[in-house]
Amino acid sequence: MSKQFDVIVIGGGPGGYIAAIRAAQLGFNVACIDEWKNAKGGPALGGTCTNVGCIPSKALLQSSEHFDQASHHFAEHGIEVKGLGLDVAKMLARKDNVVKQNNDGIVYLFKKNKVTFFHGRGSFAAAREGLYDIQVAGAAEEAISGKHIIVATGSSARALPGAPFDEENILSNDGALRIGGVPKKLGLIGSGVIGLEMGSVWRRLGAEVTVLEGLPTFLGAVDQQIAKEAKKAFDKQGLKIALGVKVGEVKSSKKGVNIAYTDAKGEAQTLDVDKLIISIGRVANTQGLNPEAVGLKLDERGAVVVDDECRASLPNVWAIGDVVRGPMLAHKAEEEGVAVAERIAGQHGHVNFNTIPWVIYTNPEIAWVGQTEEQLKAAGRAYKAGTFPFMANGRARALGDTTGMVKMLADAATDEILGVHIVGPMASELIAECVVAMEFRASSEDIARICHAHPSLSEATKEAALAVDKRTLNF
Ligand code: FAD
Ligand code: NAI
Image (tube, rainbow, N blue to C red; front, side, top):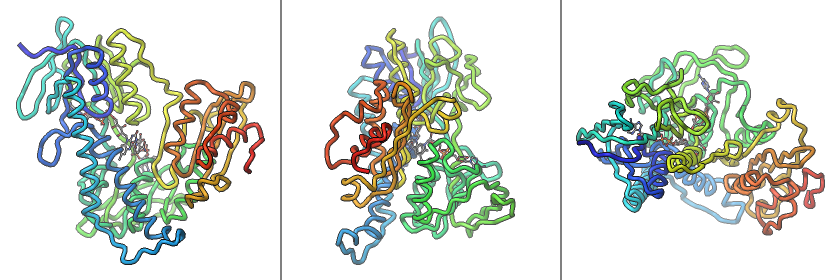
């Protein structure tokens, strides 16, 4: 007889491992299956986020930011650095160690919460009498069965037709995080989140970086006042971003990569680089899951079809995170994981899609929650806007980091906050206050009346709230 569980989670990324832990906390007998292998072939829990996503990219962003500060900004503080050097191998080893700490942390959490872990690929085998049979193919073959299945198999980098990833010259996010030395010339296709974060890492370390973006608008999903401010900063840093291009043939050879493209004016161009990162979005991981065995419905992009509550097309089958609709963000996957575990327990798990924050960890950081000014205009919603520049914030001046602003949008009649958009220092942390405010349906006046520590960057948020009512105190 196969081992039987109340809940089987397929995928151990932020969606899956969090769902497994929450289900175990609620008293279920839980298994989690994940196939990710570390360099030695052992398990590496945490999925894309931990292994080749959020965590290693932030480790390299931090290291490269330190290098950039030491190279260009310490002198302003009267700090002289002589003989500054760069050891890329050590930087990568530190990043790998940060990843390992996170992998190990999840193993510990599984033990603590009594989640049974299977290392291998999980696929649907059959459905019978209120149970699903799941085959695990790893070092050993194993058959297990569960009453509830949570599919959390995540996503992989989308390849450009005609330019398959070889992770040597043509890199996905995986190869982009382990380039062995600073390339003289680096190309990126796609100026989305990965393009900007990875482009920033290697630019700060000294590469000449060119980003080719298909759309004519820079960061189209971002409030355009904020995107324009960010673009100015990236231009100053020497990130060359060509918008409105049409990428043609991509040729890889021992010498590097040659990319033919048409620029925004319609003129034919070529770009020669040592390495090319392709960051043009991601695709759901459903190959290998054998959805046909049970008739699990996928959409035309291969994502698992779910309703608003993550219920898939079969009873007691759920799907969360990157493998379903919605933003591909680790915290969105986690929230869905918690909500599904609670729904299985008969509780009312809930994810508020209106208050999911976004952060791009460039310098300046870009962070937002809620609607952009463009979205409000398109919806015909009457709103008031308030902005406050970091230039007028004492802490930002002391930090020597005055780029950017906080922008708050509030309903014209009720003053409810509808969106907050930040470009500037520590935007990733500042946005949390705004998420809380929106979750509690606060007005801009609520933020304006709250005491914020001085001197702190958060005073810029308070001032942006005051600006909604045209009564800033420091600008
Ligand atoms: P994943 O993390 O992709 O995990 C899925 C897991 O399932 C993987 O381990 C996979 O091997 C496993 N799996 C797949 N199929 C099977 C199967 N059949 N059997 C067993 N196991 C299987 N998001 C943020 O919020 N903040 C960031 O800063 C951020 N930075 C990023 C940087 C990069 C470079 C990238 C690529 C992504 C980044 N993301 C970030 C996005 C984030 O990584 C994803 O949204 C998140 O990992 C999705 O979580 P998930 O659990 O749905 O899937
Ligand atoms: P993306 O969707 O952010 O950006 C892709 C970009 O590529 C878009 O601007 C698109 O217009 C462009 N593009 C698509 N096809 C193209 C083509 N043929 N030629 C030129 N340009 C083209 O996707 P990205 O950067 O790959 O990241 C994937 C996802 O991973 C993100 O959407 C995000 O959900 C997640 N992520 C989140 C991070 C964070 O939260 N800080 C960091 C990195 C990734």
